[in-house]
Image (cartoon, rainbow, N blue to C red; front, top):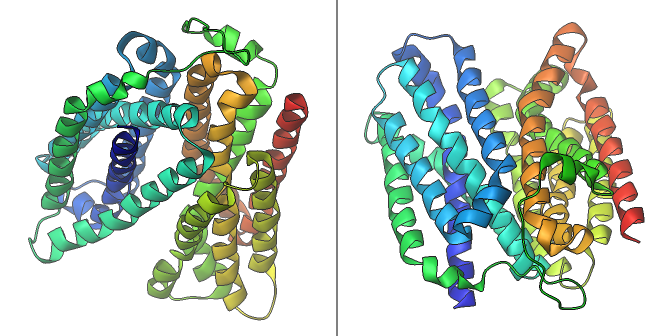
Length: 387
Protein backbone atom coordinates (compact mmCIF):
# COMPACT_ATOMS: atom_id res chain seq x y z
CA UNK A 1 0.00 0.00 0.00
CA UNK A 2 2.89 2.34 0.79
CA UNK A 3 4.34 1.92 -2.71
CA UNK A 4 0.95 2.56 -4.33
CA UNK A 5 0.50 5.72 -2.30
CA UNK A 6 4.02 6.88 -3.21
CA UNK A 7 3.21 6.48 -6.92
CA UNK A 8 0.08 8.57 -6.38
CA UNK A 9 2.10 11.27 -4.62
CA UNK A 10 4.53 11.35 -7.55
CA UNK A 11 1.60 11.83 -9.93
CA UNK A 12 0.26 14.62 -7.70
CA UNK A 13 3.57 16.46 -8.01
CA UNK A 14 3.57 16.10 -11.80
CA UNK A 15 0.09 17.64 -11.71
CA UNK A 16 1.38 20.42 -9.41
CA UNK A 17 3.93 21.39 -12.07
CA UNK A 18 1.52 21.10 -15.01
CA UNK A 19 -0.30 24.45 -14.61
CA UNK A 20 2.84 26.46 -13.76
CA UNK A 21 3.90 27.15 -17.36
CA UNK A 22 0.45 27.54 -18.90
CA UNK A 23 -0.05 31.25 -18.20
CA UNK A 24 3.33 32.25 -19.60
CA UNK A 25 2.84 30.06 -22.68
CA UNK A 26 -0.63 31.45 -23.45
CA UNK A 27 -0.17 35.07 -22.38
CA UNK A 28 1.20 36.51 -25.68
CA UNK A 29 -2.14 35.65 -27.30
CA UNK A 30 -4.33 35.83 -24.21
CA UNK A 31 -3.55 39.44 -23.28
CA UNK A 32 -4.33 40.63 -26.83
CA UNK A 33 -7.59 38.71 -26.89
CA UNK A 34 -8.64 40.28 -23.57
CA UNK A 35 -7.26 43.74 -24.49
CA UNK A 36 -5.05 44.14 -21.42
CA UNK A 37 -1.37 45.17 -21.16
CA UNK A 38 1.34 42.52 -21.13
CA UNK A 39 2.22 43.45 -17.54
CA UNK A 40 -1.20 42.34 -16.27
CA UNK A 41 0.03 38.74 -16.10
CA UNK A 42 1.96 39.84 -13.03
CA UNK A 43 -1.23 40.64 -11.12
CA UNK A 44 -2.57 37.14 -11.75
CA UNK A 45 0.70 35.59 -10.57
CA UNK A 46 0.67 37.76 -7.45
CA UNK A 47 -2.85 36.66 -6.52
CA UNK A 48 -1.84 33.02 -7.01
CA UNK A 49 1.23 33.52 -4.81
CA UNK A 50 -0.82 35.20 -2.05
CA UNK A 51 -3.29 32.30 -2.02
CA UNK A 52 -0.42 29.83 -1.93
CA UNK A 53 1.25 31.64 0.98
CA UNK A 54 -1.97 31.74 3.01
CA UNK A 55 -2.82 28.06 2.47
CA UNK A 56 0.77 27.11 3.36
CA UNK A 57 0.66 29.10 6.60
CA UNK A 58 -2.51 27.35 7.74
CA UNK A 59 -1.57 23.86 6.51
CA UNK A 60 -0.73 22.72 10.06
CA UNK A 61 -4.24 23.49 11.32
CA UNK A 62 -5.87 21.98 8.24
CA UNK A 63 -3.81 18.80 8.56
CA UNK A 64 -4.73 18.43 12.21
CA UNK A 65 -8.42 18.74 11.41
CA UNK A 66 -8.86 16.88 8.12
CA UNK A 67 -5.79 14.70 7.51
CA UNK A 68 -3.31 14.61 4.62
CA UNK A 69 -5.50 12.58 2.22
CA UNK A 70 -8.54 14.84 2.40
CA UNK A 71 -6.52 18.06 2.19
CA UNK A 72 -4.67 16.76 -0.88
CA UNK A 73 -7.91 15.71 -2.57
CA UNK A 74 -9.61 19.03 -1.84
CA UNK A 75 -6.55 21.01 -2.96
CA UNK A 76 -6.29 19.18 -6.28
CA UNK A 77 -10.03 19.74 -6.76
CA UNK A 78 -9.57 23.48 -6.18
CA UNK A 79 -6.85 23.66 -8.84
CA UNK A 80 -9.05 21.65 -11.23
CA UNK A 81 -11.95 24.09 -10.71
CA UNK A 82 -9.62 27.06 -11.17
CA UNK A 83 -8.11 25.70 -14.38
CA UNK A 84 -11.55 24.93 -15.79
CA UNK A 85 -12.51 28.49 -14.87
CA UNK A 86 -9.48 29.80 -16.78
CA UNK A 87 -10.55 27.76 -19.81
CA UNK A 88 -13.99 29.43 -19.94
CA UNK A 89 -12.77 32.94 -19.09
CA UNK A 90 -13.53 35.58 -21.68
CA UNK A 91 -12.56 38.65 -19.64
CA UNK A 92 -9.57 39.54 -17.50
CA UNK A 93 -11.54 39.84 -14.25
CA UNK A 94 -12.53 36.19 -14.63
CA UNK A 95 -8.88 35.14 -14.70
CA UNK A 96 -8.31 37.18 -11.54
CA UNK A 97 -11.29 35.50 -9.86
CA UNK A 98 -10.19 31.95 -10.69
CA UNK A 99 -6.60 32.71 -9.65
CA UNK A 100 -7.83 32.66 -6.03
CA UNK A 101 -8.77 28.94 -5.80
CA UNK A 102 -5.73 28.13 -7.94
CA UNK A 103 -3.39 29.65 -5.32
CA UNK A 104 -5.12 28.02 -2.36
CA UNK A 105 -5.11 24.62 -4.06
CA UNK A 106 -1.46 24.74 -5.11
CA UNK A 107 -0.30 25.78 -1.65
CA UNK A 108 -2.26 23.00 0.03
CA UNK A 109 -0.79 20.28 -2.18
CA UNK A 110 2.75 21.63 -1.85
CA UNK A 111 2.86 21.98 1.94
CA UNK A 112 0.96 18.79 2.83
CA UNK A 113 2.73 16.44 0.42
CA UNK A 114 6.20 17.78 1.20
CA UNK A 115 5.62 17.12 4.89
CA UNK A 116 4.06 13.69 4.29
CA UNK A 117 7.01 12.50 2.20
CA UNK A 118 9.54 14.00 4.65
CA UNK A 119 7.93 12.00 7.47
CA UNK A 120 7.26 8.71 5.75
CA UNK A 121 9.79 8.18 2.96
CA UNK A 122 13.55 8.18 2.47
CA UNK A 123 15.54 11.19 1.25
CA UNK A 124 15.84 9.97 -2.35
CA UNK A 125 12.06 10.09 -2.77
CA UNK A 126 11.99 13.76 -1.82
CA UNK A 127 14.46 14.55 -4.63
CA UNK A 128 12.61 12.43 -7.16
CA UNK A 129 9.34 14.00 -6.03
CA UNK A 130 10.60 17.45 -6.99
CA UNK A 131 12.03 16.01 -10.19
CA UNK A 132 8.45 15.04 -11.05
CA UNK A 133 7.40 18.66 -10.57
CA UNK A 134 10.00 19.57 -13.20
CA UNK A 135 8.52 16.96 -15.53
CA UNK A 136 5.06 18.51 -15.14
CA UNK A 137 6.36 22.05 -15.65
CA UNK A 138 8.20 20.90 -18.79
CA UNK A 139 5.16 19.15 -20.27
CA UNK A 140 2.64 21.99 -19.93
CA UNK A 141 4.15 24.29 -22.61
CA UNK A 142 3.76 21.46 -25.10
CA UNK A 143 0.12 21.03 -24.07
CA UNK A 144 -0.49 24.74 -24.64
CA UNK A 145 1.43 24.62 -27.92
CA UNK A 146 -0.77 21.73 -29.08
CA UNK A 147 -3.89 23.70 -28.12
CA UNK A 148 -2.72 26.80 -30.00
CA UNK A 149 -1.49 25.04 -33.15
CA UNK A 150 -3.82 22.06 -33.53
CA UNK A 151 -6.95 23.25 -31.74
CA UNK A 152 -6.48 26.94 -32.53
CA UNK A 153 -7.51 28.12 -29.06
CA UNK A 154 -5.52 28.71 -25.85
CA UNK A 155 -8.53 27.76 -23.71
CA UNK A 156 -8.20 24.11 -24.73
CA UNK A 157 -4.76 24.01 -23.10
CA UNK A 158 -6.31 24.91 -19.75
CA UNK A 159 -9.23 22.57 -20.39
CA UNK A 160 -6.93 19.59 -21.05
CA UNK A 161 -4.97 20.19 -17.84
CA UNK A 162 -8.18 20.76 -15.85
CA UNK A 163 -9.52 17.39 -17.03
CA UNK A 164 -6.28 15.74 -15.91
CA UNK A 165 -6.67 17.42 -12.51
CA UNK A 166 -10.32 16.36 -12.22
CA UNK A 167 -9.37 12.73 -12.88
CA UNK A 168 -6.53 12.97 -10.38
CA UNK A 169 -8.70 14.54 -7.66
CA UNK A 170 -11.20 11.69 -8.11
CA UNK A 171 -8.42 9.14 -7.68
CA UNK A 172 -7.11 10.93 -4.58
CA UNK A 173 -10.59 10.98 -3.00
CA UNK A 174 -10.90 7.23 -3.65
CA UNK A 175 -7.42 6.67 -2.17
CA UNK A 176 -8.07 8.46 1.14
CA UNK A 177 -8.03 5.12 3.07
CA UNK A 178 -4.44 4.59 1.85
CA UNK A 179 -3.34 7.62 3.84
CA UNK A 180 -4.13 5.76 7.08
CA UNK A 181 -0.45 5.74 8.01
CA UNK A 182 -1.17 9.13 9.55
CA UNK A 183 1.53 11.38 10.89
CA UNK A 184 4.08 9.69 13.10
CA UNK A 185 4.76 12.27 15.80
CA UNK A 186 6.59 10.01 18.25
CA UNK A 187 9.72 11.46 19.82
CA UNK A 188 13.23 10.01 19.67
CA UNK A 189 12.40 7.59 22.49
CA UNK A 190 9.43 6.22 20.56
CA UNK A 191 6.90 7.83 22.88
CA UNK A 192 3.71 9.14 21.30
CA UNK A 193 3.39 12.90 21.22
CA UNK A 194 0.02 14.48 20.58
CA UNK A 195 0.04 16.76 17.55
CA UNK A 196 -1.39 20.19 18.22
CA UNK A 197 -1.49 23.09 15.77
CA UNK A 198 1.15 25.68 16.61
CA UNK A 199 0.65 29.42 16.71
CA UNK A 200 2.93 31.60 14.60
CA UNK A 201 4.51 32.95 17.78
CA UNK A 202 5.38 29.41 18.86
CA UNK A 203 6.77 28.56 15.42
CA UNK A 204 9.07 31.57 15.23
CA UNK A 205 10.23 30.95 18.79
CA UNK A 206 11.67 27.54 17.85
CA UNK A 207 15.46 27.60 17.98
CA UNK A 208 16.77 27.77 14.42
CA UNK A 209 13.39 28.45 12.81
CA UNK A 210 14.19 31.94 11.51
CA UNK A 211 17.55 30.96 9.92
CA UNK A 212 15.79 27.98 8.33
CA UNK A 213 13.08 30.22 6.87
CA UNK A 214 15.65 32.73 5.58
CA UNK A 215 17.61 29.85 4.05
CA UNK A 216 14.54 28.76 2.13
CA UNK A 217 13.64 32.34 1.18
CA UNK A 218 17.12 32.97 -0.25
CA UNK A 219 17.18 29.68 -2.16
CA UNK A 220 13.77 30.16 -3.79
CA UNK A 221 14.62 33.77 -4.63
CA UNK A 222 17.80 32.57 -6.36
CA UNK A 223 16.00 29.81 -8.27
CA UNK A 224 13.25 31.94 -9.78
CA UNK A 225 15.51 34.96 -10.40
CA UNK A 226 17.93 32.79 -12.37
CA UNK A 227 15.17 31.20 -14.45
CA UNK A 228 13.15 34.39 -15.01
CA UNK A 229 16.06 36.57 -16.16
CA UNK A 230 18.10 33.97 -18.04
CA UNK A 231 16.80 34.96 -21.48
CA UNK A 232 17.21 38.68 -20.87
CA UNK A 233 20.77 38.15 -19.58
CA UNK A 234 21.70 36.17 -22.68
CA UNK A 235 20.19 38.80 -25.01
CA UNK A 236 21.53 41.95 -23.35
CA UNK A 237 24.86 40.70 -22.01
CA UNK A 238 25.85 38.14 -24.64
CA UNK A 239 23.87 39.44 -27.66
CA UNK A 240 21.86 36.29 -28.31
CA UNK A 241 18.78 36.69 -30.50
CA UNK A 242 15.53 36.57 -28.44
CA UNK A 243 14.53 33.35 -30.20
CA UNK A 244 17.83 31.63 -29.43
CA UNK A 245 17.85 32.93 -25.85
CA UNK A 246 14.34 31.57 -25.22
CA UNK A 247 15.50 28.12 -26.26
CA UNK A 248 18.78 28.20 -24.34
CA UNK A 249 17.12 29.53 -21.17
CA UNK A 250 15.79 26.01 -20.61
CA UNK A 251 19.37 25.01 -19.69
CA UNK A 252 18.65 26.03 -16.10
CA UNK A 253 15.59 23.77 -15.79
CA UNK A 254 17.33 20.93 -17.58
CA UNK A 255 20.09 21.24 -14.99
CA UNK A 256 17.71 21.32 -12.03
CA UNK A 257 15.55 18.42 -13.31
CA UNK A 258 18.51 16.17 -14.12
CA UNK A 259 20.18 17.22 -10.87
CA UNK A 260 17.22 16.19 -8.75
CA UNK A 261 17.05 12.84 -10.49
CA UNK A 262 20.76 12.27 -9.77
CA UNK A 263 20.42 13.66 -6.25
CA UNK A 264 17.96 10.89 -5.42
CA UNK A 265 20.80 8.38 -5.79
CA UNK A 266 23.29 10.59 -3.92
CA UNK A 267 20.80 10.90 -1.05
CA UNK A 268 21.13 7.16 -0.45
CA UNK A 269 24.73 7.73 0.67
CA UNK A 270 25.11 11.34 1.79
CA UNK A 271 23.28 13.42 4.40
CA UNK A 272 20.97 16.33 3.60
CA UNK A 273 23.51 18.78 5.05
CA UNK A 274 26.29 17.41 2.83
CA UNK A 275 24.15 17.60 -0.30
CA UNK A 276 23.09 21.18 0.44
CA UNK A 277 26.75 22.19 0.88
CA UNK A 278 27.60 20.43 -2.38
CA UNK A 279 24.77 22.34 -4.04
CA UNK A 280 26.14 25.65 -2.74
CA UNK A 281 29.61 24.91 -4.17
CA UNK A 282 28.26 23.81 -7.56
CA UNK A 283 25.98 26.86 -7.76
CA UNK A 284 28.94 29.15 -7.01
CA UNK A 285 30.90 27.50 -9.84
CA UNK A 286 27.95 28.05 -12.17
CA UNK A 287 27.78 31.75 -11.28
CA UNK A 288 31.51 32.08 -12.02
CA UNK A 289 30.93 30.54 -15.46
CA UNK A 290 28.22 33.16 -16.12
CA UNK A 291 30.77 35.98 -15.85
CA UNK A 292 33.75 34.37 -17.63
CA UNK A 293 34.79 36.63 -20.51
CA UNK A 294 35.36 35.63 -24.10
CA UNK A 295 32.78 33.05 -25.09
CA UNK A 296 28.99 33.12 -24.68
CA UNK A 297 28.96 29.34 -24.32
CA UNK A 298 30.34 29.83 -20.80
CA UNK A 299 27.11 31.63 -19.85
CA UNK A 300 25.04 28.71 -21.15
CA UNK A 301 27.18 26.27 -19.19
CA UNK A 302 26.81 28.56 -16.17
CA UNK A 303 23.00 28.44 -16.17
CA UNK A 304 23.05 24.64 -16.51
CA UNK A 305 25.56 24.32 -13.65
CA UNK A 306 23.54 26.71 -11.46
CA UNK A 307 20.53 24.48 -12.09
CA UNK A 308 22.55 21.42 -11.07
CA UNK A 309 23.65 23.20 -7.91
CA UNK A 310 20.12 24.25 -7.03
CA UNK A 311 18.81 20.70 -7.50
CA UNK A 312 19.47 19.23 -4.03
CA UNK A 313 18.74 22.30 -1.91
CA UNK A 314 14.91 22.48 -1.92
CA UNK A 315 14.21 18.76 -1.34
CA UNK A 316 16.99 18.40 1.24
CA UNK A 317 15.81 21.37 3.33
CA UNK A 318 12.31 19.89 3.39
CA UNK A 319 13.49 16.36 4.15
CA UNK A 320 15.70 17.35 7.09
CA UNK A 321 12.98 19.47 8.75
CA UNK A 322 11.36 16.65 10.83
CA UNK A 323 14.82 15.47 11.96
CA UNK A 324 15.97 18.91 13.10
CA UNK A 325 12.76 20.35 14.55
CA UNK A 326 10.77 17.22 15.47
CA UNK A 327 8.05 15.25 13.74
CA UNK A 328 5.33 16.93 15.75
CA UNK A 329 6.47 20.37 14.52
CA UNK A 330 7.29 19.46 10.92
CA UNK A 331 3.98 20.44 9.28
CA UNK A 332 3.97 23.83 11.00
CA UNK A 333 7.61 24.40 9.99
CA UNK A 334 7.16 23.23 6.40
CA UNK A 335 4.02 25.32 6.03
CA UNK A 336 5.91 28.49 7.00
CA UNK A 337 8.86 27.41 4.83
CA UNK A 338 6.51 27.24 1.84
CA UNK A 339 5.19 30.69 2.73
CA UNK A 340 8.73 32.11 2.78
CA UNK A 341 9.47 30.29 -0.48
CA UNK A 342 6.56 31.87 -2.32
CA UNK A 343 7.31 35.26 -0.77
CA UNK A 344 10.79 34.99 -2.28
CA UNK A 345 9.29 33.92 -5.60
CA UNK A 346 6.97 36.92 -5.56
CA UNK A 347 9.33 39.74 -4.62
CA UNK A 348 13.01 39.02 -5.27
CA UNK A 349 12.97 38.43 -9.07
CA UNK A 350 10.95 41.65 -9.41
CA UNK A 351 13.47 43.48 -7.23
CA UNK A 352 16.27 42.45 -9.57
CA UNK A 353 14.20 43.76 -12.49
CA UNK A 354 14.11 47.17 -10.82
CA UNK A 355 17.87 47.02 -10.14
CA UNK A 356 18.55 46.07 -13.77
CA UNK A 357 16.43 48.98 -15.03
CA UNK A 358 18.55 51.48 -13.10
CA UNK A 359 21.93 49.78 -13.57
CA UNK A 360 22.60 46.81 -15.85
CA UNK A 361 21.40 43.25 -16.26
CA UNK A 362 25.09 42.30 -16.11
CA UNK A 363 24.66 42.42 -12.33
CA UNK A 364 22.59 39.21 -12.40
CA UNK A 365 25.53 36.98 -11.30
CA UNK A 366 26.30 39.39 -8.43
CA UNK A 367 22.66 39.34 -7.30
CA UNK A 368 22.59 35.53 -7.45
CA UNK A 369 25.85 35.32 -5.50
CA UNK A 370 24.47 37.54 -2.70
CA UNK A 371 21.39 35.28 -2.42
CA UNK A 372 23.65 32.21 -2.46
CA UNK A 373 25.80 33.67 0.34
CA UNK A 374 22.72 34.33 2.51
CA UNK A 375 21.50 30.80 1.83
CA UNK A 376 24.86 29.24 2.70
CA UNK A 377 25.26 31.22 5.93
CA UNK A 378 21.73 30.48 7.13
CA UNK A 379 22.18 26.78 6.39
CA UNK A 380 25.37 26.64 8.45
CA UNK A 381 23.55 28.33 11.35
CA UNK A 382 20.84 25.66 11.16
CA UNK A 383 23.45 22.88 10.87
CA UNK A 384 25.26 24.17 13.97
CA UNK A 385 22.00 24.19 15.93
CA UNK A 386 21.38 20.62 14.76
CA UNK A 387 24.80 19.53 16.05
